[in-house]
Each structure stands twice: as structure tokens, then as C-alpha cells.
Image (cartoon, rainbow, N blue to C red; front, side, top):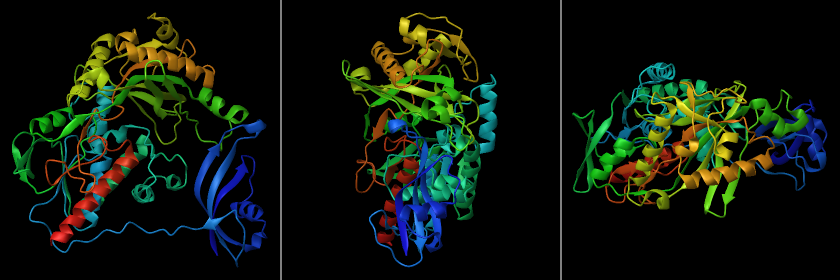
Length: 529
């Protein structure tokens, strides 16, 4: 008999084998437990009435014989993702623009189904991209086409590699399994908050690329799609690097949330789009031990526990805005994430071990059309303005403006006594972040910091550093698409996918979005043959 237990708990000091824990939970002799496999593991650090930190498990168990009870359920049937296989190739290969998570998994879906997608990625392959980014971090020149935002793997390649998502979709397991098959740590299959780390992601994306190539796909790096051809309301081709033309009957657009020149080109071509809300703010840094202690109390040094994270939210009733922590990176560092000269943007990045000793997270405030207008590209221009201000106040040399929380709250600037040295790699300049962000955003952020300090005492200590600016939390616009066909509402055979198109947020949800659009296309293609 196979069952699933969803409420098994164990304290940190419980060293007994999983089979014994299961037997005790089910009140059975251990001899009846044939096997036990962890499906999900989560840390429970809630301290109701002084309860210790513990692990909560979901476990699939095979039992000798049958049992009765209410503390288990049948094991859900698992099925591998099945790809319909095409009997013939289309006259023109489908084109995938962008090789981030959405484009990568759209291309993988097409390739596993027997099609041979052509992929155009404006940035470099992983190895050359890493070299270019490290050169920039060390004070070298910015490559506007191959950087933290653009290149193989997308922006996620230079991140914490979080694979958590708010979606409840059976494709999640497929995406995680694909990552593991490509070299990701196998524990991501059962951890509640799986992450790969930027170090592992660099291997994973290369291996997925190799599979696509082995199945007949082609990828061109340093190949920016600079124009699309639309004839009678249908896609007919793309122009690469301003001159080279490729004919196609289908495009999957997964360019990421920073491809502003691509948005402008599509707007000129009349592709239906709209501005949308997003969030802007700053990065905050603490000693990782401080966050561990706040989360785990006296257990904060226990080696069994993962490096601690935080999730914080604040509702500003007075101004009608929300503030929240975003892309929190335990044991990581702040990075220079701009893709444009004359602008400063921050993000967070961690390796798999999360062992830098520094915790950083974005603290951001929602902004919308009331802040930047309703034109399609007004949100893009709003981002640009803030990033240019950060560039100026950082010293006009890609250094970031930094301010202590104490100075930010009091309206002063210039303090240099930081709790931790800001990790932004190019360097920083003490500045007034109130001059880099809109007044209403700063007022909400001030109240949010005070609220967060009540939840985590010391979070908003006077010497904690803030680094600006964080602006690329999500796409500032959405390419409108039909819910059923997943095509643009006014351009046929044009499939906007992923975070850049405004339909996902993060690696896993973007990958799923790419898979679903590719499957819709495949179904349509098979019906026509």
C-alpha cells in the first residue's frame, strides 16, 4: 500500500531514520514500513508557546499490507511531461527570441517534440558572459548587450537562483526535474524553498542548451532581434543585428524585463501593449547571523538549518501603497545590474552555499500609472529616470549611492559608519537616497522600515546600509495576448512569454509560461498537418 503523509514533524535533534519517524507517526511496527521518500521538507520556526524549531515533512510511504486512519492520503499519480511528436518539420522554423527561462523552456519543449527552433540571444554564451560581467564589476566597460540582464540564462543566471513560485501547477515538478537532470542539486526536488544558486545555474543553462542543440535546434549568441516583420497581421520574419533577415511563421518572445529597445520597436510596429504597475526601492544589507538569530533564536547556529530568509510586507493606508521585501538573497551580495550606460541598478545574487556572511534584500514600494502616466512606455521612462539619478548621485562612474538607515529616516546624508560594508562590487558613494526616488515612495519606505523594525528588532538600526536603486522588480509593461491561444491580440503567430512580456515573475513561473505557449503552438501545428 502506498500513502502520502503530509503532517510529519521532527525536532532538529531527532537523528532517527525516516522509517522510524514514519512508523511512530502511523503507530505501526517499523517492519511494516517498506520505504519512505521525502516529497517536501520545510523549516517550521514558529515558536508557539516556546516550541522548538522543527522540520515539517511530506513523505510518500510504502507499507506492507493495508492500514486505516485519517492522517494520510493516497499518493497522487505522477506522470512525466508528455511531448506530442511532430511527423514533419514546418516550412519555416519557429523562432525563439531570448534564452532566459521562458525562451529556454519554450525552445526545449519544441525541440523535444521534434521541431528545430532557431534561438536568437542578444547576449553572450554563459562563459563569455561571465567574463564580461566580472570585467564590468571590476571597473571595466559595460557591454550593453551582454551583462547581468542579457545573455544565456537571462537575468536569473546572476541571481540567487530561487525556484519558488506562487503557482500551483503540475509543471513545477517537471521544471525542477529538468534542472536536476541538467546538473542542479537534487535536493531542490523536495525543499520547500528550492534554490540553485548562480554558480550551479551556469552549468544548468549550458546543459539545457546542449540538449536543444542535440535535438536539431540552433542558437545564435550576440544576435539581437532588432525588428520584426508583420504582413497582414501575421508574423513573417525577424531582422537580426539590424541587417540579417530570417523568415518564420512563429515567434516566441522571451526577452526579459529589461529589453527596452525591443519594447520600443514593438510599439512602433503596432503590437498591442499596455503599461503596468511594478515596484521600486533600495537594497538593504545585514550580517547573515543577525537574520539567522532573528529567525531561529537559540537554534541559529544549528548546522542542520538552512541560511535564514525573511519576507516582510507593509500596507500604507495613508498613501494607498504597498511595500515589501523582494528577491531576498541570504548569504549573497548586491550586484551592479544595469544594462545601459549612464544608469545604476541593483539586484541580489547568491551562490548555492549562500556563505558570504551577508544577507541582502530589496525593499520596494509599488508604483503605477498615477506615478508615471498611462502611455505604453511611461513605466520604462520612469525606471530610466530613477536609474539616471542613481548614476549621478553615485558619482557618474557606476558607483552606487548608499545611505545608512538612520540618515534616510532623519533626512541626513553622509554617514560612513556601516554595520556591514556595502557589497555592491563597483564601489559606492555616500548620498541621499531621497534624491534618487520619488517623495511618495520614500515616505512609504520610511514607514515600512519602522514597521519592519518592530517585526525584526534591529532590522532598521541606524548603521544598516541601503543601496540604490532597485527598479527592475518586474516588467513595466505587458504585451497583450489572448488567454486561449496565447498569441498577441493583434499579431497572429506572435507568442509573448515570460517576465518581460508581463506574464510571470521568477525562474520557475517563466519556464512554465514558455512551456505552455510552446504546447499551444504545437497543438495548433499538429491540427494543421
